[in-house]
Amino acid sequence: MFKPLDPLLHSELRLAVMSLLVSVKEAEFGFIKEKTGATAGNLSIQLQKLYEADYVVLEKSFKGNYPLTTCRITKKGIDAFEKYVNALNAYIRPK
Image (cartoon, rainbow, N blue to C red; front, side):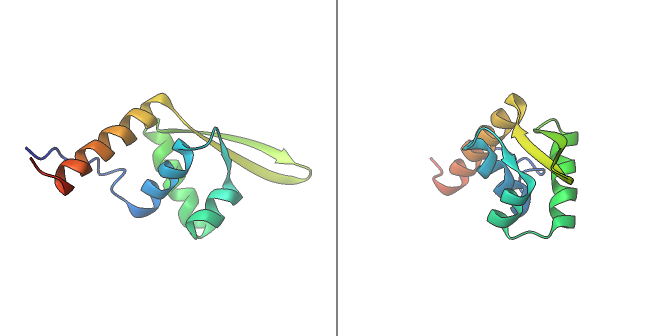
């Protein structure tokens, strides 16, 4: 009856990042940091984990003289997020 929850998305910060990215085309690192309240170091680590799972794409560039990281959710990331939400709903509203 209960489906396992994706351990990668079961982290509060990674879930928050995915929730943000699923609702926008792309987001800059600073925007995600501000919205989640995460530290830069912790956010970097969590984004790297999502990147390694192919849930997000990270694009590095420069804005003026400053480094800029832009994040986008992938098709695999969207599918994983939807699967996670559906599985979580089964825990909340068991049949």
